[in-house]
Length: 405
Image (cartoon, rainbow, N blue to C red):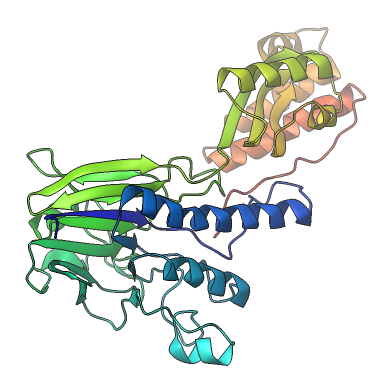
């Protein structure tokens, strides 16, 4: 028996969630194809385990996004886990064990879900428990499933966590790393601090909940914990997720590699515009920004155009010039270009025009407000008003939300 354990860590897959942000106008076929790609990415774990000689998959929460995930997806995922040596699953805040959870024994029976494979361990209850890795009396894995948000001052790791003795001790935790003490009324997911985690007597902690990769190191620079992040490009906030392939011994983690199992990347790029003159110039700016960031046809892309334009034009043409797998554009930050100082000066003279008087009125109101939202509304009103005065078609702004929660 080797004195080193090779593990694979994954979290925050959120199966059953929207696979592309809401602002994408893609067909149902594209969304279904993306869902299939994600499942195929999970299926690749079987080959990765074989190639790497890994012994256990650590799932640090939010494998599923909600209880409504389809039986077909649930059965397929557990069939994948059944082909792995051993899998430990810690339910997170999205897939906590409720009466209708796909982890619930009663729910599985009522929905016709396949029985859980014998090599899959799910942490249950409302306290910490431990399980030994089959065939490895020197490896123990501990976890406490999510049961509900707690006050930010209520930290599970504030006290020593009890575990069974073993040379290699792994902890699964799905929660938010905090830096300071906040209001007691504030509720968040299983909060902890780095110092609390480092004070625990665990060789390594597999973390979930945050969608980007990050580590917690001790004073000697040894990795004691890591978030693997969301491994599939599904939202603009998540650009740095992966699975982790690690080696850990009694002395700690000797190797931790980020491994990408997604076939696509996601980009959210700003395109700066200065009095852009028309569709051709706009398209050129977009292509230049994509080239600078090495955006490939297989990627998922949003372009946000910011700045000014000389006149009104229909920017929809850009949708026909880019070849990304999924693409959307936000033109809400692109305003009509004009010299405000020149118009304000003009408004003070005898040759004041309707445009200059209108600009002076808006800026007088801007000087009276402090809230950023109120200022944004006034600037939109300025843009709409200048368009109307110049006989340009006015189209209401479409506000795009990134909130997938």
